[in-house]
Amino acid sequence: MRHLLSIRDLVRDDVERILETAGALQGVEGKLPTLQGKLVLSLFFESSTRTSSSFELAAKKLSADVMTLKSAGSSVDKGESLKDTILTLGQYEPQAIVVRHPQIGAPQLVVRHAAAAVVNAGDGKHQHPTQALLDLFTMRGALGRLDGLHVAIVGDVLHSRVARSLVQALALVGAHTTLVGPPTLIPRGIEAMGCDTATEIGAIADADVVYVVRMQRERMESAFVPSLREYAARWAVTPERVRPGQKVMHPGPINRGVEIDGRVADSPDSLILEQVRCGLAVRMAVLHDLLAAGAPARETAAVA
Ligand code: NCD
Image (cartoon, rainbow, N blue to C red; front, side, top):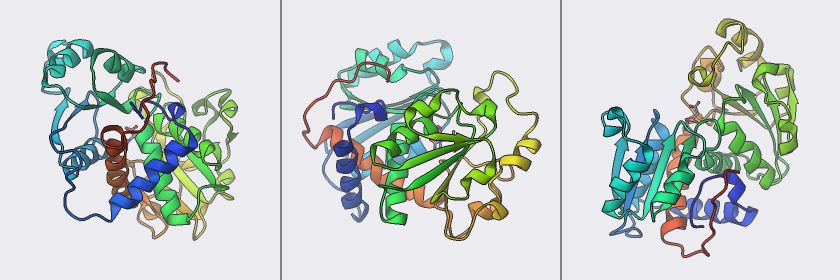
């Protein structure tokens, strides 16, 4: 693997290999010398808690040097473009660049202007491939399999790069997805990605996993639901709407009382914190795959 920009760039074997490496790395205590002498740049042009912290920690646990730059407080605030930021930081000769940016396709631009392996840590509402990989890893750990699983993704799918990446990743490993939410927040024609859609919350009943996504108001240009209160009344994942044993996931940040009831988030069936733990192992595995594994190079230039 040369870059990780989109789940579309992966075949099932790539996914299996990364999950296997993550499994092997998860048990390791302390640091591994694998990436000694390598520099990982982590560039966040959008807010992040889990993704930025886990990439930084993952790189450190593999003994890489890490430099994290957040757009707030950097010269991006002064109008410097992504291209100029990359050309500038490229002078430090990083081996990997992890980038989150509000614009779709920004990671491809980084590929064009840097010699490093590029990891997309979220580009607008397009893709968030490492989130999908860590979600698969979490599901397989909790349920013992991926093939044949039924996952219901509930909420603002339209603005969710997490949902888009996850639908593709689940299809790749033989799992099935139902997207559930208000008709205005389910992208038209998304069934072409190999999933079904439903507008009633009752559609989550048969799912092995209920995967909740946030109302991403920062990406909404107009009102897609009458109010958050009405949204919650019809689509919030509450204790009454899930059954014992049905696993609940959420990429975070959660908005308690909006898309998810706090009692569900804190219940024994919630995998939300497990996702965070798995995120560290999967991001270590991704950095390992890109920088240490010596797998055949594959160019990924197009926005998939
Ligand atoms: C998500 C993101 O940034 O796409 N968060 C994450 O990476 N864990 C989801 C979100 O912001 O709702």
